[in-house]
Image 1 (cartoon, rainbow, N blue to C red):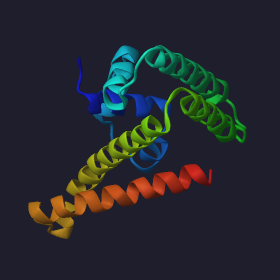
Image 2 (cartoon, rainbow, N blue to C red; image 1 turned 30 degrees about the horizontal axis):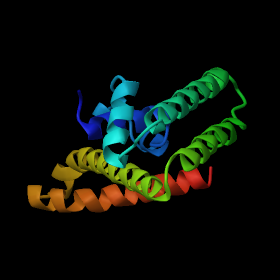
Image 3 (spheres, rainbow, N blue to C red; image 1 turned 90 degrees about the vertical axis):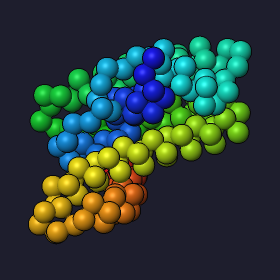
Length: 168
């Protein structure tokens, strides 16, 4: 089984929640690997202490989310007018979030949001490091300076991504 972070990065990348990372960079990452739904559900079960029917309900939500998300992307893939795409994607994400709110307890939902936030910070910090490494020679950054800037730029990129998604 892949690590929990790798599994969730894959899920987030496929789910489009890191859409801004793709828009801001052209860097491929491990987040674009193969998605294994069982690994995602296992990871969520572990981190959220899912019990009873929750894992299967979450799996159903994930399948619906991925199916609907992919259908919208295919619908607009060759379309010249993509004006409705973001609204449709946001509706799919909203339905997924609403489903989570009915399946998870308040405590589990908070833990889910914290996990997603942690993973987004890790993804964007990796992107930040790659970009900083590109700039390192020109800026004459030491390795220490680069590593100190990495989380700062990573957090800034998360904030930009959230802002872009919220105002799209």
